[in-house]
Length: 138
View 1 (tube, rainbow, N blue to C red):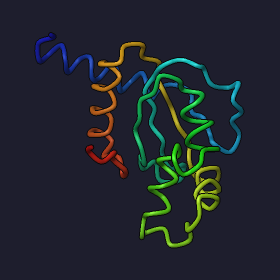
View 2: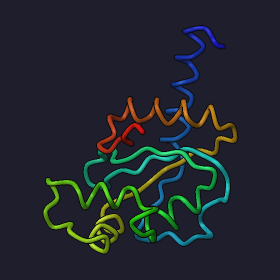
View 3: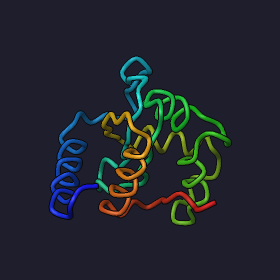
């Protein structure tokens, strides 16, 4: 366990690392652009930089490309949130949500091997960015 000042320094390092990394646009990614490694990611709107979603995964490529962009109802959580969002009345179907993501969203990620650390970083970034969509508790 780190002391408080060490934790704050670590949080700053995480923030700098993820937001100084490469920006990927959903409109132009192909699967080979992304690693098949564990990490934490932030999906945000290009025009306003509002963070929509923060997540963690064992496989960046599968989660961001296969699930969030190309996925169906059972695997595309962000699409579900967009379809359910009453502030976005033009998004009715999952195909509408996919088009919205492609036209409006970007993402950044960092690779993090340890599962517990990914969970802590996901929570930290969700809080600090005030992500619009937060996973409901089970």
